[in-house]
Length: 409
Image 1 (cartoon, rainbow, N blue to C red):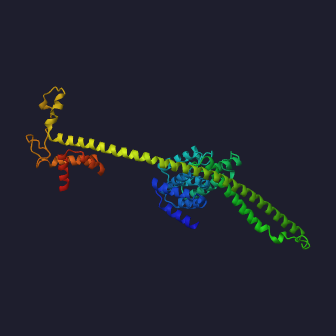
Image 2 (image 1 turned 180 degrees about the vertical axis):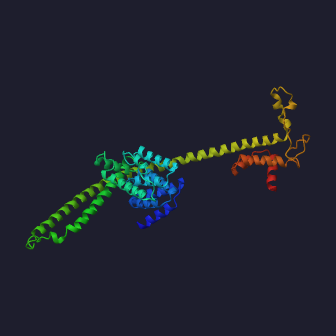
Image 3 (image 1 turned 90 degrees about the horizontal axis):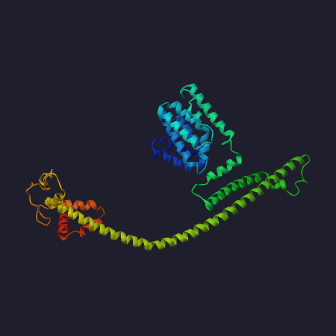
């Protein structure tokens, strides 16, 4: 236990207010929930010794641990409850700023609304009840708060609920929410096996002490020394009680194991049947998967050709602005067509309005358009396979120009 407590102390020293830091340590705490009682003592000591601004982070961690561990068991809830009132007051006394007050109030409201600690009111936790820890009043308030918090569980958690109902509720809470039907029943049966095994172990320990061969020998009564008759009787009564308790524990353990074995067999058969059916379905889906993949590749080629054609058309049209003039003229405009162009087209290489359009397969002057088309192709098809499909769909002259340009780079 010393190793895990020391590890928890180191982890608390590195804890900060980031979500990643709190959630990571919270998951670690939930995993080690069986040791919650010992880890809470470390949490309490480190909270008391932490700087004022870091104390709120300890409450954040406690909140996350409580919220995430409830469905797995009540170990952390029961371990933290006795000191949470003190922890809240302690934090408020040592971090008396508006942000801390708001966050503490928010935490208390969440715990109250979700009945984390039962139906009792938690509003008293928000009253610091003292000045600070540096003075005697603050230390006395800390002691009083811890004593009051620890006194409340003695009255019973959810004291308005009968004991048998609380035990049943705890057993249900311990079953993971993802389990249903036979799996949930098996989980409960395994818990019953654990409880029965613990009871049997305790009964065996009692028998080792009381059911001694010398106490139950055939002639133990006949050879009992004078004046030891009462003591001999008490030993035999203790041996009889120990044996009866062991027999009852054996009977309970046998029933629990038989029930768990029955449910385990049913769950095993159910899982085995599901595995067989799902494996067969997986094999059958292979044909559909091949069909879908083939159609997807065919659609990819068609889309690549369409994108290549659109890119080629865009590259050709950008070199000759006169080709798009009729489309602009087709729409009625109140002003002459010559005045509709705000910025005249200037080729990328420079040359002015009177430079003639140069086709892509002509020598010189077309490098800019090849680069533009190549950039368009690469931007439109990040996948190399699709890029080559688009390249193959281009006209021979454009494809040759792009391949030559790529070879020069």
